[in-house]
Length: 240
Length: 169
Image (tube, rainbow over the protein chains, first blue to last red):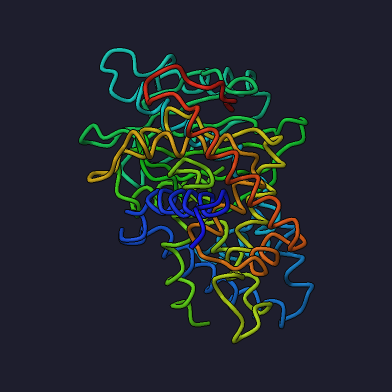
């Protein structure tokens, strides 16, 4: 037969390259699927059924829900919100994700502090809220997590990608701390980012639930099991 | 709706997303977005058609939107990407170099190359997933292969001088 040609060489090289690429992240194929992705499918398929019932009840009902997005009375409404906002929420992901990462890092930096966990302590709550509201240019509210066993430690001002951010710290009786991180979220063009449903960011360095509402990002971070963190985030959302 | 067929595709989606973005966290977020969107648009899937191709199509659209939002910049800090790649029982240096070089390919070339190499999609499937003509698939694939080979041959060893990479932060 004929001597090897350039194209034979090429074919071999491409085959080798393909094999190398198939070695990339091969372990991911055999890992168990993370719980939060399974839940995403479950929730999204439930909320789809849920929102369709609303659509059948009349388009008016759906538009009222969108217009008065504040009237959350039950857990099911989280689902309605994300079903309707799903298209809009997509484009927000990188900005919101970076925000959640900042929140997790801020938590990891300040929550272990014994002497200086906060700049302004809970004893001066009114001053704290006024100060941070002025710096973030938004009237802030400190959620009351007493029912969940957490009391306010205090808060601090932090620098963010596009300006000031606030961190409120809470602590339970055992000294377990969670932090609520708040800041304006804008994309590169300065347009405020779209609202998102609750998102879970696992780990790195601590897990958090984050969401975007009216141009502001919120992230609740803490070394807690996912359900506990979700219950706290839910309580925070309902009060803000 | 029966979600089992979608769930069965998750590992492949995760691997592709990780190779595409170079970052475990970004990748899983992309997968999560894709899954939510797929469930929301479930009625648009034609029963009997290729579910895997449909999911990859959705993922591609979500990813393109995110790139647009980020102004086309690479979203991943390469040092983080290298860290994510340290899987036991692999050749970390080679894989780190490979991922690093992949991230230097233009995004549209990277997508074509990975769909062909990781997922064994035929040219016509890739054309559908990416919504481009089949001729474009072939030319992008051949450019991607050649460029990746070039980068790997000229590439520095892990830990050596790093090629200039764009960072988000």
